[in-house]
Image (cartoon, rainbow, N blue to C red; front, side, top):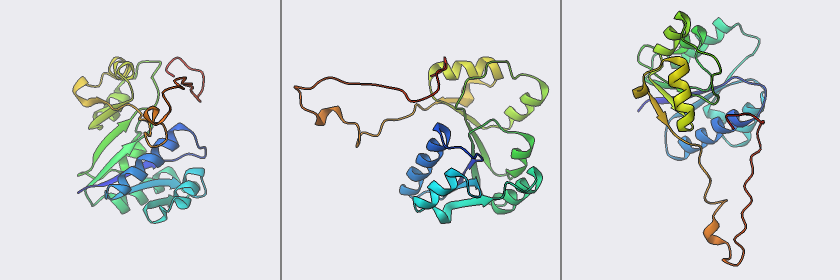
Length: 189
C-alpha cells in the first residue's frame, strides 16, 4: 500500500489545515500509512503533536530554501510508492518532491478567478493524476479555468461528523435547526 503524504506548509490554522488534520486522523484510524509535511512550530505542527501524530509528522524548517526542502522530502518519500495530496496547486518545486512512482492528487479548496491555461500551468496540471473538488460548481470552475479533463475531477464534499451533529437524537418537540457558516464572506462559500 502506498504512503499517503499531505503538505501543510502554512503558519496559520484555518479550514485548509483543519481538513489536513481531520483527513490525517481518519487515515491513521483506518490503518493507512499517512504523513503530513509541516513547518517546524507551525499551528498545524503543534496540533498534530497534541493529537498524538508526532511519528507521522514530517517537520521541515522554514529557513531551508525551497529546493533544499524539496530534496529533503524527495529523500524521505521519493523511492517508495507514495501518494501526494497537494492542498494548493503544485509548483515546479513541489513536483520535485514527487518520485517517479508517486501519484499526485490535488484537493482544491478555492475557486480560480482567472484562467490558468498558459504553458506553465498546463504543464503543472498535467502532472496531477486526480483533482478533488468540494462541490459540483467547484468542479465546473476547475474544468473551465484549468482545462483539466473532466475525467480527472472527482467531487468529494466536506462531511458532517454525525457523532456530534445528529438530529435524530433530539426531541421531536424541538425541531428548530440553526445552520451557520464560519468562514470568509466569499461567493464560493
